[in-house]
Length: 290
Image (tube, rainbow, N blue to C red; front, side, top):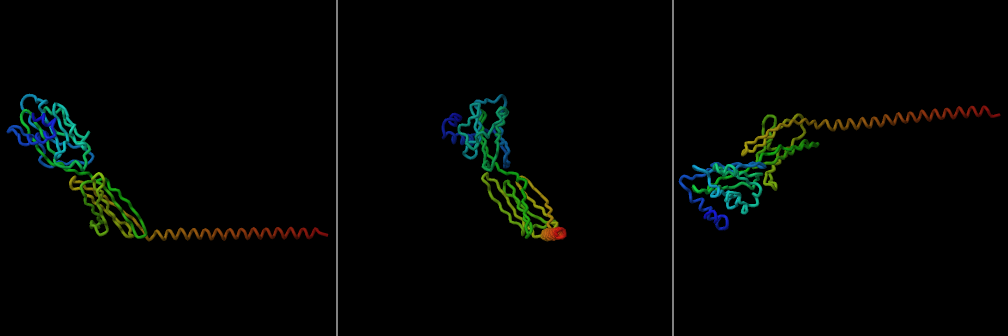
């Protein structure tokens, strides 16, 4: 009668929940995780739940398995098949029971493509001919931080490094010099939340003109025990850049001057030769006249 009330009456959902919570047989005990479970972004996770079967085969027709997140229906099974009419849209096409293992007492649920919105308290309710029970456990969320993207900008005032990475929860980011000293006074770090609920951490490091600068940044995500250490070696001889620039400019001007002088000399020589030829022609003509 409890199953019928669950299937056909919205009020029956509450009644079944109460029944599964209070009607616990002394020999019927379901098992769920004691510690909070961690869901990793983009992966699937298994919400573990098992129940005693006892001697003989399980009567699947009497088995009811219900997964909820608060009052939100995540997945339900009765009448020997999945019943997803009341499933929350957020979980549509993302949940799967291990149907072939139900007769062994495995009521675990696979949840695909987890996201920050999947955090919360999940309850597993199981009812069989042996008894019924409901237990709840916490699911937390985390995401590995992506490989940092570093943008380097060089100007007359020095060099600027802009680093970005994305993950969950909020991570810590430190810059160190080659002696291991923290360079917090030269950095500005910000954290923002993107539309997917992940954290985007950005850090800006500014260094004045220098040569052979060695840096290290350390990004830590303690929940996933993730630590990224990356070393950067900068070789910036800022003072030489203008000298090289002026040197090239001076060489260019010198080349132009030399080319102009040579061209003028050629033109002068050509003009002189032209005058000499004209003078010789005039002298020959004057001799030939009577």
